Length: 312
Length: 298
View 1 (cartoon, chains in turn blue, green):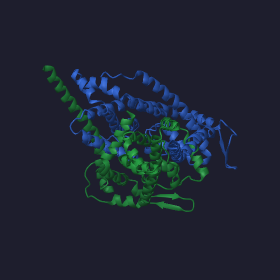
View 2: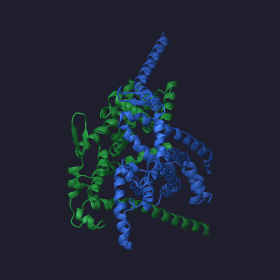
View 3: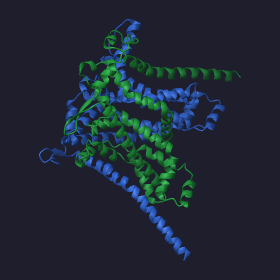
């Protein structure tokens, strides 16, 4: 009798648990089904559709229209080849200059130089402020402050650094570093802080210097995070607009350089404001994903094979 | 002995180089900031003759121009509306509060439910789906999402956008989920023995135990909403937030007196000021976010 009563109570509790569980998961599940699965599936379908202004519906009257439009525009626009090259230059700059510099800064601060806490706070502050603020400030500093400093030192007028074609590319590349080093540094420091103190001590007792410690202990320990950054950064080979949309807005002609990502952003944002252009945006998204996904997974595979091993 | 001395000398030299590099990086950021703030107190004439020095006769003219012309004309269907700084401020607060609250409820409750009932087989499946969806970079959803918003009649609707943003496919879901594992199960068991219901345990036991993360969540979502202009541009153009208004103001060239460095830099400074104040009070708390993110990703 007691057992049966206990069984009933247990069953009631389990039923209550299940009701509670499904009641709270219902909304996220519905949301996921509609706004993730359906939306992504519909994007695929939408890419092959066109908007009919008369009936105000999307139909399959010309399934390849959006893709043809994209490739036609791409073929006609020779600037786009430069844009793709620029995207690769930007990624290479990130790999060769920004990431090593960020890692160097992180390692310095991780080793607790005097004033580490102050430096960390100061490096974090720029992360908090809007990119538009930084772009505006950088623009005026590059166009007015730096040329004025150079003029007052050398006596020569050099003009604005962003409006000068020979310096604009360098300045726009440097902006990426100027703006993002602080955030990246703090992320790496956090990952480095997770390295057990005993391992660091053991390396020191083995007579390892800072460089050996970095190569054989620090880098392997933060490798998963490093890999994640490199991996997700691959998407930027195609999508990065190098903040050009914030610098120059919709006005492509005023930008001294272009990237494929900037070209895509302009068209996406313009098209997103017109319901009849949404299929074109969907087609662009599909082309983007078709390039990014295999690229990302290949890079991930390569990185997981070449990753360093810890010595400690 | 000689080797040890050499090593300590090398270490000191590395330290010195390190400090120099960090200071240099900070100077490269903060010198333009200080220069920019200084320019906001210059008159137009003063700026033309001297772009580097201190203001000759400090003036608030740029601030006056900023507050007069920092607006955007939007069309809400029925009639054109002029949105000024204070209206955008209200929009920003409403949007960030609504967005943060909706996203928080969704992230927190889903993480808690999947943690608390992890004995149910489906909870593992849901967790895996969320992790995959967070990490899978699908670029095609924008168009279809916008199409759906138009079809549902919720395009350019702030409240609807907040509700539609309430999903657990966010990094904070993972933070909440992993934080529950650090809470001793005794807390939940003791509450159950005392007769507390499931909802009460979630709200009165679990929630206060992760209140640090909750504060961090609200701070970060608020800052993101303040700074972001793209969401407004794409989804709610007639409810400009500060970030969007600043972006539009950057390209605004009429009347001619605002198309000037001193006024544009004033806009930068005024729009960044509330975030700087927030940083002064909650800077340490906000930095924890980076530590947590670094820890989780590492």
